[in-house]
Image (tube, rainbow, N blue to C red; front, top):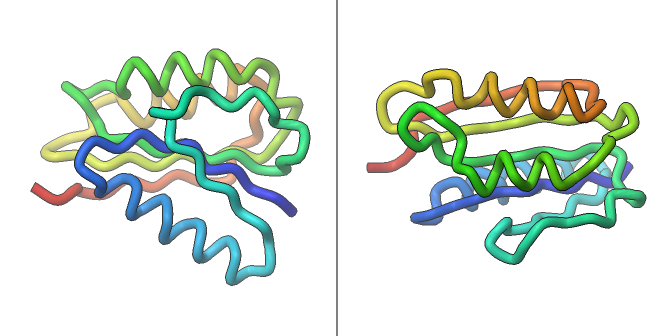
Length: 119
């Protein structure tokens, strides 16, 4: 199994969480690739069985770059998907918006995670 984790990080906290998730995936015997959305969107999804998306919550919403990246992925063709978010106070609808976008793209949700980020 091969997993791709897309993440958007401003201060590095979301990146650190993505790295820890990747360590767990690798410890389970699977390959995991991290991709910073600052480097653009990945359009080569063919090698991946699972796709994760991580982001900080901005004003109760996911950052525009994250929603645009999900839209650019195209059809996920039943691939396993998961999302994680970091928040300062409340996540609002941010995580659910990303979950819905991944499902609309054809992803099969396997989990979600949210936590307070560092201040």
